[in-house]
Length: 149
Image 1 (tube, one colour):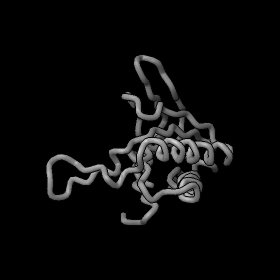
Image 2 (image 1 turned 90 degrees about the vertical axis):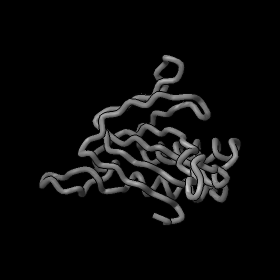
Image 3 (image 1 turned 135 degrees about the vertical axis):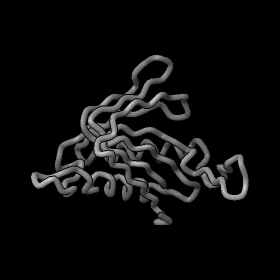
């Protein structure tokens, strides 16, 4: 599982002119699901993201987590995070999970965040989405469950 995590002051996702998810301060999480991912990976990734210390404390140091600041999360599925463009111009997506298991694990990841007490907004799986966000810092973190980066 791969995630691009961005600290935001606000964000929203729109599908067909309708807002499907909107948050105030918190995190936008672009989430890609790989072929080898499981429910355990989804739960572990949610725990990791919720506890990332990327929000500033009183001294201005990034010492607080999403849970600490009681922020929200906007989770958007993005299979293109598994695009492999090494050696060619058209990325290959063979490492991405097929739609059915990817959707299930996307929902499990979102549900795991909710179980931790985080308000979660979402996009629509496999839809053409427009994501608007205000990245604060800017702070952007890449996370890979296989720890390849």
